[in-house]
Length: 208
Image (cartoon, rainbow, N blue to C red; front, top):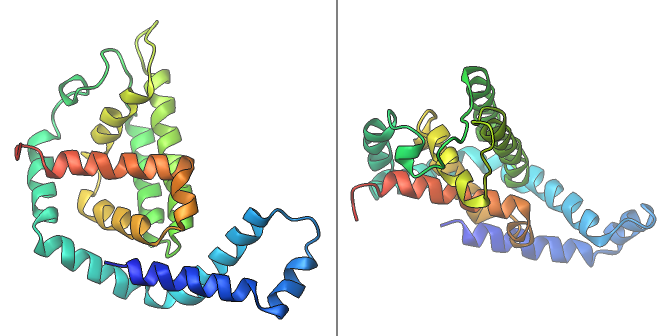
């Protein structure tokens, strides 16, 4: 839905990199790696191009998800699944889950993530949430339990069932569509994809 916006950001960034005035500024930074310069310009474009229209873009995404029934399915299935244990969500036996204080911290971070207009900043906050979850998986686990990457998704799902899934779905769509494609290849892209998959699990529960 927002692919044209992302394409416009990419085209504008390439144009700016070719601008002599911008090149003069970046040259003054010395031996700064190209990927850092790219990230700096990307964030500047978010402030100039996305911040003024963030609310409008969010409304468009929310309307699309409401009209296709996703938000209603999320809320309905959340009510069905929210009292299930981690193991009932296909989680590893003995894995820990966030306690009430960590859940409160995560909820605060979800709110901060939603308020951010920059998809890059949203992903940075998502990474902090994922670290909270990973820490809880180990800190609150039964002794001797070992976890793999596959064990993270059920725990993330467990956390989502205690969160505002409708808002998180729209935030996830916003990041997926507007994040710089290069950033989708790194750690942020991995956890963003995990968030998308967990939300899909909830919204599609009972349909298969």
